[in-house]
Each structure stands twice: as C-alpha cells, then as structure tokens.
Image (cartoon, rainbow, N blue to C red; front, top):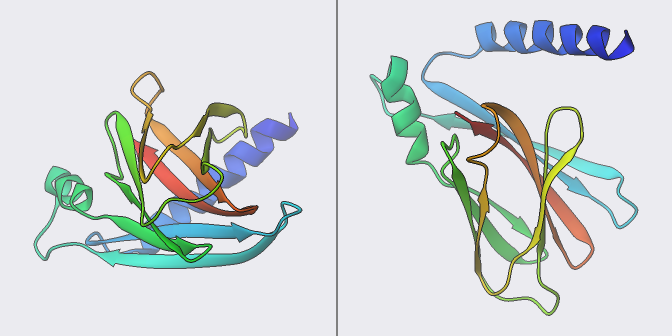
Length: 151
C-alpha cells in the first residue's frame, strides 16, 4: 500500500512539474555522493532545445544533446538521452580502478552493474521497458547520477 501511495505521489509531482516547463526545454538532474553513499549535491540543468521543436521532433533534437558533468577531475558524457537502446559513456581520461556504472529502475532495483575499461563504455537498455532509469557512475569512491529516459 505504501508503494502505491508513493507511486501516486510521484506521478502527481511529475505531472505538476511537466506543466511548469515550456515544451522546448528539458530538465536534467545529477547527484553527487560522498564515500558513505550520502547525497551531498544536487545539480539541475535546463536544456534548451532548438527553436520550433515540437511533438516527436522534440525528442530527435534532444538525442543530439550530450549530457556532461565532471567527477574526480574527469569529464563524463552520456548520450543519447532519451535512448531507444544503448547509452554510451565517455570519460575524458583513464583511471586506476575501472569506473563502475550502475543502472536502477524507479523501484531502486539494479538492472545493470558494469565496469568500464578504458575511456568508452556502453550500457544496453534495449531489453528494458520504456520509462525512467537512474544511472550512477562511481570513480575513485565518488559518484554522480543521471536520469535516463528509455523510449
């Protein structure tokens, strides 16, 4: 019962937020965690799409966007978001320990847990249902999180 109430609250909250954002902008949130797993920072990024983007072309414009953040002095980029299958991950330079990528569904269940060798990696979401997923990248004990939309 508690899950149902939380889910309904989330749906109402998302619906209210969707009305407050103009159709040619998208919001991206990322989170930074300390070594103990406590969230220390939340960053919001508003992405302005190409002018005149409406309907399905809006998603096509967004796929051209690369979401980038910095973690442990390394630039990390993920793309495309939203995705129909795979999310590509690019890290500006290699690290001693292979970066770990963990993908969660909205229930908090781990659906992918992988180490990236080198500076490029990929997470395949093609077998997952369309919806929102959360991707966490861990480098040197610090982590950063993105919201990923699977179409």
